[in-house]
Amino acid sequence: MGLGRRRWISGSSVYNDVLSIPNLEDRIRPTFTKTANSKLSILTWPTPPRNVLIVKKRHVPVVRGALVSLARHLKGNYPSTNIILEPSTAHSVHHELDFPVYTLPPSESNTPFPYTQSTYPRTPQLNPRQTHIPQIPQPSTSETGDKAINVVEELGPGGERLYHDKTDLLITLGGDGTILHAASLFSACRMVPPVLSFAMGTLGFLGEWKWEEHAEAVGEAFAGGAMVLRRERLKVGVYDDDGKRVTGEWEFESIGDAHAMNEVNIHRGKSPHLAIVEVFVDGRFLTEAVADGMIIATPTGSTAYSLSSGGSIVHPSVSSLLLTPICPRSLSFRPLVLPADCVLTLKLSAKNRAGKVEVSVDGRHWGGIGRGEEVRVWAEKIDGDKGGIPCLKGRIGGREDDGWVGGLNGLLKFNYPFGEEE
Image (tube, rainbow, N blue to C red; front, side):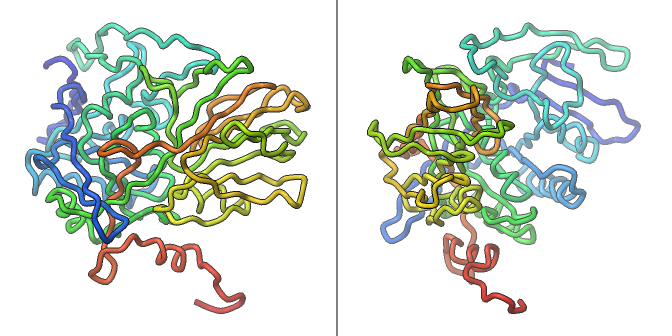
């Protein structure tokens, strides 16, 4: 058995192979052409996609079954397709497939397999004050049955780089949380692969396709010419009281900022005291917020945590930043919508009673910042094929549509009359 390959022995004729992502060819990079009379872009492939990463919602048997069906559909109709799965998913479903699947190799020689969803290799979990990224581990030996095989450990500083380099198309099966999780795998990548999302979760506001349409949706994604919405992301950097960058768990190679699809927020965490945060817009002092926390959101994130905190709902094609306080002390502190080209700074005041506040990016805990430290946020620039999250759009009533209005009415029950039945 070659390097980077593991086999689980079974009495059936199923291949039961889980191979290492480094064995795949590098990704195919599509282009996006802006249309004249639409807010959407057209997806074009130089050659058909080969490597498809499928991310599913956890612990839902129906979604698990859908993943197996989708993998078989892809391999049956597009034989050159390679299926990439997260490690825990690969281990749980590979025995049901008659072809190999690919996943991340272990990051360390003592990493247990199967991985749990919360421990599979991702970006290095650095201490918030740590600036050194661990060295690449050396290849190790793993026992399989009676034979010892070598396992290639090519993760380098952050397993996500393998996803960045190898994934042509990203497919999600689940709800909005699944899409956010999938997007976080590319939080340090400037060229996120096209995302084809199937609404199989609780809300599904971001899900563009129903599962019953998966054959049609996959056909459109592979053929090219599909309509794509480039969803803006935030860039997030943390700086100390001397203005020097502080590294966090998202740090990877030369990319010093996280990218957030929904929002970044700072909040008081376990402290019983309100946070005191100084807010700056393009370096100019705006106000001193006394609140549970502050949210800076994208238009996509305007229907998430920001909305729950009283923020505005903004169409995803409106280039902007949303500044929303979380339970402010002052009733006159209202949410703001600001231009996307400004830089927002949230600085923890020296008057803050607790020593630090918590920082989260798309619901993922980053760490804390102390008095005098600050979070700087600005919109990622969409330049040509780089920037944003390209989401493949569905069709409504036979016409191309961004689905936003239908989502407001059908899912969020926008302005729904009080007391009326459906």
